[in-house]
Image 1 (cartoon, rainbow, N blue to C red):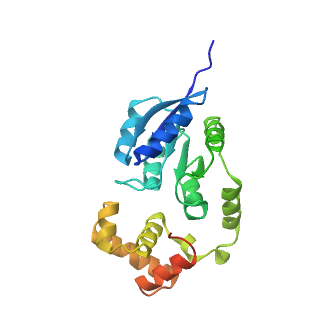
Image 2 (cartoon, rainbow, N blue to C red):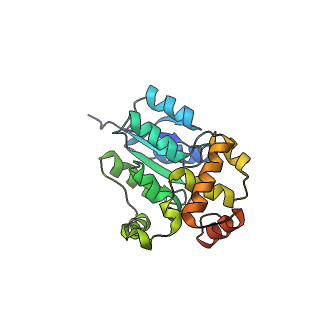
Image 3 (cartoon, one colour):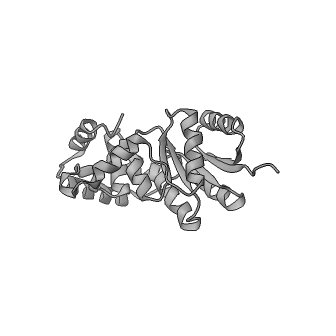
Length: 214
């Protein structure tokens, strides 16, 4: 009797990335593609309509941030292991993703064998922690006073900081995050206060100094 395959859902807005992931899964005997989605709304439909054992979820989605999508899915499907697969380095989002309920975090630069291994680990109900992510988690165990100011920000405040630093206006950010300009302005004001910064130029300088933007 053949072993039942792990059904893996792929959520990424780039067709070429989905194709690459699909090929990796098709070349792996104990896995198959449960379905694909290119945005947060489609990811919700996918998980509600199909049997899924593991989800591969991108951080950068066009309609809603990956961390927000992760939280929404975990509210409905608390037991579904979600592996974040992102172009962002581990120091940018890994700890936040794990705190939000992700079962693991990998960058898109990871080797296919590492991805396959990670899927098997999270499907077995464990967390997949790479050495780089383990290092980030260790840093976060330190006292709050030793942590850099940006780690004290909420997810929305952190997103706002990164987007401002990448040259986006409050209006651009509101549109990208599907929020009102007033709400984004509140996040901006909060992050300035928490971090002791005065304006967008200081936000950009801080983000570049701490390698939060590319």
